[in-house]
Image 1 (cartoon, rainbow, N blue to C red):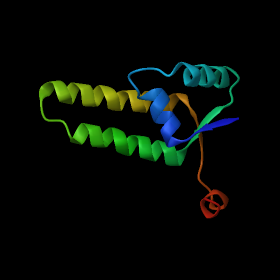
Image 2: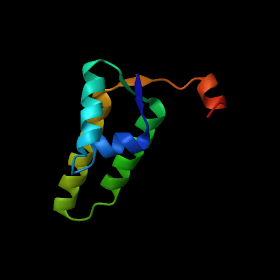
Image 3: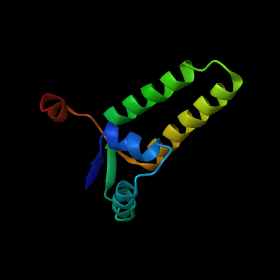
Length: 92
């Protein structure tokens, strides 16, 4: 089982230039149905995506920002999500 934290999620799903070693690991884990993220990462990714949308000024920036936000939403929808429970919260 591989659980993506916020940094790895961002590096893989939102980076313009792929990182080959990371890409290989994620594809292999996903093929074996061993790839997860957490609801906390989802919240942080959505918050970051919304921040990009809220900073836009020109028409081109609006289009790029919403394209980025859609990329985040799509990535999150493709991952299995681990919930937050009391045990996780008290041990973090």
